[in-house]
Length: 95
Image 1 (cartoon, helix red, strand yellow):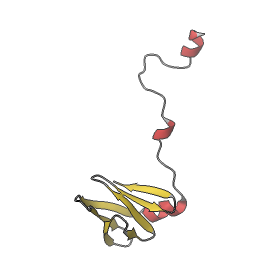
Image 2 (cartoon, one colour; image 1 turned 180 degrees about the vertical axis):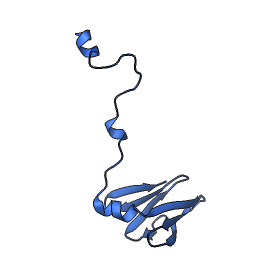
Image 3 (cartoon, rainbow, N blue to C red; image 1 turned 120 degrees about the vertical axis):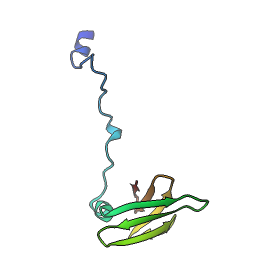
Image 4 (cartoon, rainbow, N blue to C red; image 1 turned 90 degrees about the vertical axis):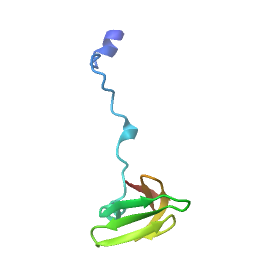
């Protein structure tokens, strides 16, 4: 029994199996298209944090707070290291 279990793996390699949950999230084509040219420039943390997002395609800079919009995307959350954008039921993190 044990030989059968061990024959399928290298017992001297510490590398574990890839975690299926560690993969990049899958987005709709619409979400991928809307976020492809967005770049997080900076975040200012306070009681009401705000962020600066640059659209490199349109060469436009957005100064946003939670609830603001960037095109069809709504700013759902701003933390010290990321901005979470929402479109319909999909979320995208800008880091």
